[in-house]
Length: 222
Picture (cartoon, rainbow, N blue to C red):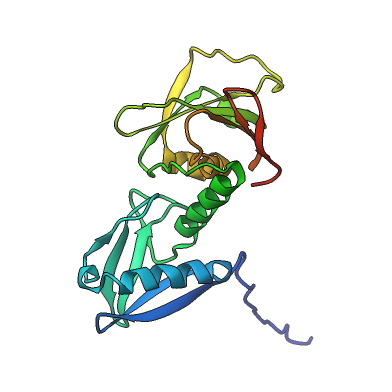
């Protein structure tokens, strides 16, 4: 009887592979990591940091629209890290800036599409939503003009064409980072200012509408 030959192999990791970009900032090597498609944005970020070199040191916080970056020293110099918005941002941190930079890029696309300045939200801002919204394929988003502190101003509800029965009085509050985990398209649309409503289908922004006159400001996949 022949001996059974055993072998093993490693499957390649799923998803785009991140790249590291290193830049000298104030005499220190500062490293950022993100998906290869975001390399120009990552290089631009490091170039901005080089202009404020005195503020780039171990333990420093760099403010960004969605979430601040933290500078941390490791064996290779200084590295940028953020809360892990793909897992548990309150408990875990990551050096992969892909999600943070992707959100910023999406907000710029939305602003260009509607020809209005972006009004970004913070990761710890809250959304108000009709309970059960997660089960809906079609959603409508609208924003109040002057929300309270820590409130994004956004309200999420099932679209009129969504089948089922919903009680608009049954509502829940969610942190923006939770919405990002559940339906990223909502966060991508959330830089639109008050007066612009969005229709979300699955994880796509289908249309952005001016509520004052009903005109379509943008449509398609954003």
